Length: 186
Image (cartoon, rainbow, N blue to C red; front, side, top):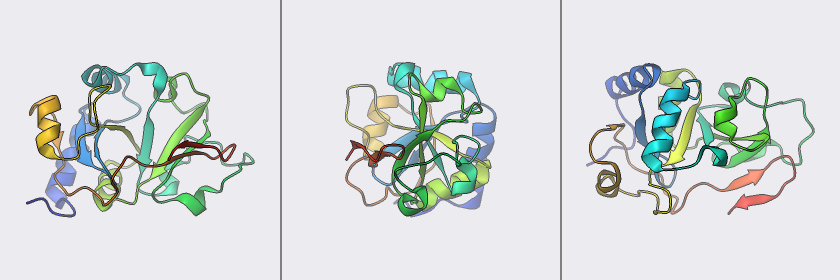
């Protein structure tokens, strides 16, 4: 049976694995996710290859708290939506800084960021010391994994898993463009 939150040793092991360029699977608010250190392009390329996902689409970065996101977006910019009203829980597209790696943004000018409401994700980001790449655990064109059985069907047992329960959402997170107020995924 999966617990709500992983223990300290599991978090420490996952954070060390991420720092070494590894990929970690973890539960999010609604589906299983795949993550890596956003500063390590090689790790990011492994995730794209596993998913057969084109880099041009870009990915989300998740964090434990707003402070972990600040290097990646221009806070002084006028926005249609205030992140403080949507975090934790909603993914927001914000104007990217020059620090934000191009490979994370894909063909977009903005960066998709979410301060997670899931306790395991928050603890993982705190143990790691920053935000993580977050993309749903599924090959392109397939439904996101909502169970470990489905995850193993997609990817086998070669990826480190941070075991905990999924959050209560039935779908991946909502995405809003904070620059315009537009709903990108409901």
